[in-house]
Length: 292
Image (tube, rainbow, N blue to C red):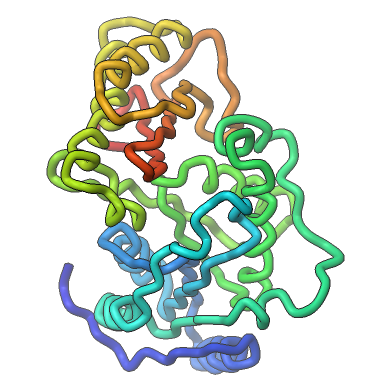
């Protein structure tokens, strides 16, 4: 990616963000927003690139949100490479980086949160109870703080994107959402901040997630339209791979996340599995001709 380094402002307070955004608006800027949890990689930077195309002032947040982690999950060890993240954000052309502390985002007792509802009842929502409530709560807060015109999310977290899109629609939030394509390594592994936890053997095993999705896509291209049959085809790939413990694999609507008896070219295959000790997710549109 081309170096587009800017004189990036780093804000750690809500007041600081609002002042910087207000100054940008006074200069006639439109505001693009990329929320992240840091540990940046090329996938995140592709979101910044898209935001820069769609707006004239780009804000990125880096906040490891405790509300979306269960007590048994990896909040404490989630990577926080502060200096590398700031350098990458600056070089990608971010104008304003928001790095709040937990105490600033969640001061005192919380009385009101956002509930995800029925759309989050399965898949990630079932495997990680309360996860999407935490995601939607922090995204709603960030939208209120930044007040962007557009926001860019990655398709890598398809279920999260579907939930955020539903929240924007249902709560009449004045922000346009863009869902950007998945960025993959040359061998197909979807970029993720958690990939750094994979050993060499684990990384080889992790490729089976992508392979399973590709097999589902190929089967659909051959004329298979049964949800059950497509899912079984994907599972058969994972069953042959050592060190992979499947959480779920399903073919669903990319917006409602619901399974249907018959699928269409816009349906998405979604998968989550633990490879070694690392939990990974991936997805693919089954009727597409690209990697999304």
